[in-house]
Each structure stands twice: as structure tokens, then as C-alpha cells.
Image 1 (cartoon, rainbow, N blue to C red):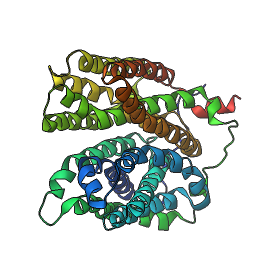
Image 2 (tube, helix red, strand yellow; image 1 turned 60 degrees about the vertical axis):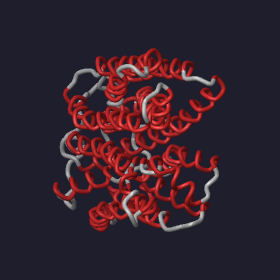
Image 3 (cartoon, rainbow, N blue to C red; image 1 turned 135 degrees about the vertical axis):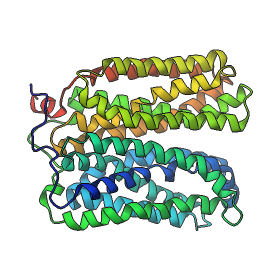
Length: 409
């Protein structure tokens, strides 16, 4: 079995230069998370300003995972109809319109619909950008995926960290704190509009449908394992974003320190985005890394269970380093596929299913915590997810291509 992609895979398209491709990837990566991560820190002010019921506020926290899953599943079909570049540009446009307009509305229903519109645009980008990178990068996507995965984490972390201070500026409020991310997304819209205009008549940009390899992706062991790896890591990330501050506060830490520790976890993920695409490209096997990710996750939750109030920063560091599994899973979408069409289908399979699992996790944690009135069972269950994540990671640690698994069936 060949272990190297063909020479033509990812060769740069004549209509997109290196500078434009880099700018487009960096800018969109920075704008695919702020619309979701900026809500939590001002949820109390947002709920009060709109008169949002607690149940509806709870729905807000689940919308990112639900929209990323539902809309992401349709992204490949959209790209097949209008092209990857046009599809991504339309996704960015939806982000801009949704984020700007929701900050101006006084209707709870309209706010939710506009939020769903923005999240849907992000979902399209989530799925199609890795496939676009695969088609346009001359090195198989290593460099661009490094910028892309780092930008995803950086954008989400910065938005979560600064939205509250920005909202407290006189005359800005929570509306300005949320709406500014829509204005910033305009910076990503410009290069993607240029790329979409250049490539909208290129038939190759629409080739995201069936390829010569036959069979559904659920029949590929690597695709299934990658979906589990992505989903389990995303589930833990959403649980940590949503519940870790409360675990720390219940252990006696201040709200400010608990929030800082949550930001520390996100900050550490940036380094994972910088490191892991190159590690994947150069390593014979990722098995040691996968074992390390699972071990770090279990160790972090064990620390929270036994001594959350002692050395709390240590548990945050362990969980943050285990979160390097996220950029690993994102980069593996391009690294475990040859044909950009397979990359698009794989991305459209891995991410929607994974994000649905991610949306279920915080709900389950809240339910178990309410029933048991404590965190012990929650943390024990989360530890078991570390074992499952390791097993899934070991399955995708070898240089096996989904294209080959589909073609052998």
C-alpha cells in the first residue's frame, strides 16, 4: 500500500497565489469560533437584556454543537452544487450577517435564528476549509493546516477572554461586545470573495461528490476511529468550557481564578495547533502521542476529583495539553486522505458526527451532576472517555489512507 499522496495532490491552483491562500486561511480560522465562544461570558447580561428564560439560555450553550453537526453534514452537498470556494464565501457571509444582526435585535426568537445562521456559516467553513487546503496546498496541507488549527483555537480563546471587558466599556454593552465579531469577520469575507470569483467557473472546485473509491465512509475503520477521536475530544472541550469553572468554584476558588484557568486550557491549545500538523507529517506513528493525550486527560480529571482546590493550575495544564488532540484530529482529516474529494467527504463525516457528540456531553454532565449533587461520578465518567479517546487515536495513528480502505471494499 502506498503511503505517500500522489504528486498532484494539493498542487496549487493557478488562480490562487500563496499570499492570498495564506491570508484567506488565517482570517477564516480566526473567525470560525468567536461567534460561539463569545456568548458564555456575557450570557447573564444577554439573558437579562432580552428577557431570555433560563431554559432558552441553556439552549444557547448547546447551539454551537447542534449547528456544527446539522449544517456541517450539508456542507459537502453545498460545495458540490456551487463549489468549495463559493460555499466557503457564502459561509463567511452568513457569519457576518448573523453576528452583526443578532446584536441589534430585541427579539429572543430572532436572536436565536440569527445565531443559528452565523453558526451554520461557521459549520460550512469547518467542513470545507480542510478540503480546500488539501486541493490548494503544495505540501499536502501541512503549513496551511498549522495556521488553520492554531487560528481556530486562538480566535475562540481571544473572543472568550475579551468579550466581557469590551462589553463593560461605557456605551458598548453586551450588544457591542457580541456584534464586533461580525464586523471583524468582514476581514475574512474579502479574500474569500476574491477566491470565489476566481474559481466559481472551475469544475474541479465542485468535485466533492463520489470518487472512484466506493462505499460509505462508515465502512472505513480509519474514518470511524477519527470521528470518535474528534468527537470525544470535542465533547471534553465543551464540558471543560461549560463546567470546569463551576467545578473550580465549588472547590473554593474565586470566579476570576476559575475563569483564568479555563482560559489557560484554551491558550495551551494554540501550541498544539502549531506543533501537531508537522508532527503528523514527520512521524512514522502517532501512537505515543495518542497514549499521552489520553493519559493527560485522565490525570487532569483525577486531580480535579482528588484535590481540585490544591494545585488547580496543574490540572488545567494537564487538560490543556490533552487538548492537543483537537488540532491533531483536524490535521488528520487532510493527512489520512489523498484526493481532495475524499478529504471533503471525510471532513463532512467526521465533524458533524463529532460535534453532535460534543453537544450531548455538557447536557449529560449537567444531568448527572444534578442527580448526584456532586462531581465524583461526572469526573469518573470523563476519565473513561480518556481511555476511549486513546483507543480511537491508536487506530488512526498509522499512515493509512481512507481512500485505500474505501477502494478495497
